[in-house]
Length: 587
Image: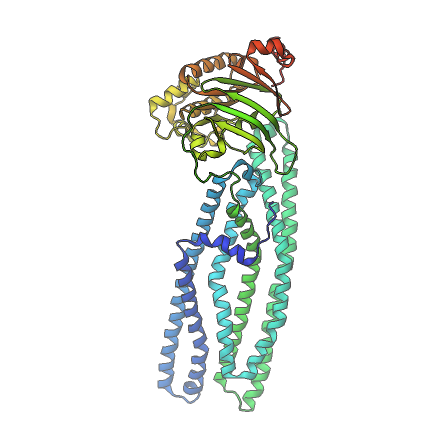
């Protein structure tokens, strides 16, 4: 989790922009709540007048007039309360909607470096549970946080107006109650922060288990996964128990204050009535004001508790909203890529700033437009990292990457990535139809264009075999397709971009050699002017390339054509011989 403990004012400034479109409703909620409070404050005063001037003297006309006024004031309070509740619900739901949209939009702008700082489970928790907590807190704030202090002030003022001696009994309970609430809030907040961190771990465990359910079952690891889930769940239970134990002091403290005030008012009021210093109506009104004051304090304590819970959520949401992409466009970006040439000049790269554990070191490599480069190397040698620098998915630590003769940092990110088609090692299809997935490459692709792309990718045969063809449903992650089928659909999607540079990151590893040969031939015919970079495990996948580079521990240890490397590179010869002999290679 990213360390960040902003002040309350900073926190509000981070979330305030998400109130757009609902600021008027928020302000009107406060207005109607104020109207409700004024009406409710007037009711005890009118009741006292009704009793003292109407009921006790037996003035029926006064009783009827005062009673009618009371009914109208009560109706006004009811109407204001209903309108305030409706507006508060709309404003809170609108804030939640905007927060979710703003968070999701922020995540979409993140670079790979930003995404590496947040786990998937953490992002989901921030978009769901945390937003719900803030929504509930905001609705309470709009109503009770406005109502409680105004009720307290007005009711206390009216109490002093009716009888100052009794009013001081209310004032006396405020300091000890404030100390109790301060203790509760300061102790509970750190615990809730731990709770939401535990939620992140729980969500991550669930996601990993569901995503890898086939592996879990194949390796009979269900019990171990259940144990991981149970550990996270127990941690949440423990932390929540601690937090709720702290919050449990809130209600007893409030009830103690309520009963103490009521006893004091009854005892002092009884003596004053006997002494003729207080009328029956005044005692009734003071008791009503006492209840309003104490209920306002109770409401305020509820808001403080909810704010305590939601503040941890608000901090986590704020971290996503203020996170700035590590990659950004220059002041005057270049919009178009001139050609498909790629050059690495003294490139070094590390995933973590300040760490010297470099994945790539001093890479010098040039690929002419329209040429094909093959990349071979052991797992972890830096092949995938190298090609991700071309589309500026990461920025180099040292050196520079040039595309079309310009440093990639000079380009508009969108323009650069439109010129680069990438089929990554992890093939991802999205829920929808086959056609919808293919049109990620070109939103306006026609049926003929999609078929041409699947022809090159050797996917047309199995797509036509589907009941609905290109309209066939794709499950989340492409779970209803085999690994080889997913690879070929992802390749077809990339071809529809008509890129100047095409990167294939081990994208034919799940297809047989005959199909792979057909794909290579199709690529040469369909994209003659496109620069191709092929990461592969098999020598046969790259032996026809114009150049082949072998990476080891982040460095290029050999470069040349197939024949040149057979003559000059012991590593390449060993790899070639092991594969042609039918044994495992090291790709």
